[in-house]
Length: 218
Ligand SMILES: [Mg+2]
Ligand SMILES: [Zn+2]
Image (cartoon, rainbow, N blue to C red; front, side):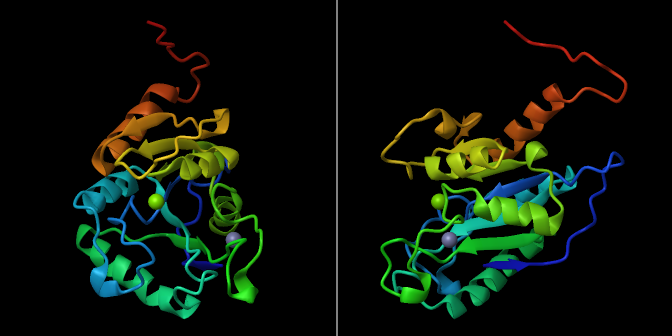
């Protein structure tokens, strides 16, 4: 279930796909209002626009990846979602930011709407939405990141081969920890998430022709 827009072609001279930052919606880009599909109640985090603009200026595609189990659970109709995506786009527009894609899972294994009640490969922590986005948008998952506010986001990112940032704002309550659920970084804001992943990349990437990169072991 994807609502994607055309994005720039992959710009990498070596033929690799573009790097992306995948973003969870509820509790990450937006303050969490459970099962909300009312555009009027959408509340973007205060630093979402500037943080996304910074990532976009640094060459990252921006892709929303969201579980929308409310469809399977009968809380709202799937047709209620496009107006929400439009409102989100309008909220980000003042920062010159547009999402390159919106991918969501409408399923739930214990739903009550038969058409959406099933196990699927796209409900996080499964990596299906990220893999589909990579295919459709020409993304390089190994150079991409997932920012989310719970460990299911971290696991989905890691299972897709991305690096991960946990926005620790109190959303995660169970802390079921497995190796796949260890984020690369834990931060307190989207601004910190953006700076942290850019700094990580800056320390990681060696210039063309340089075989060794410095290893900080201290
Ligand atoms: Mg969330
Ligand atoms: Zn699904």
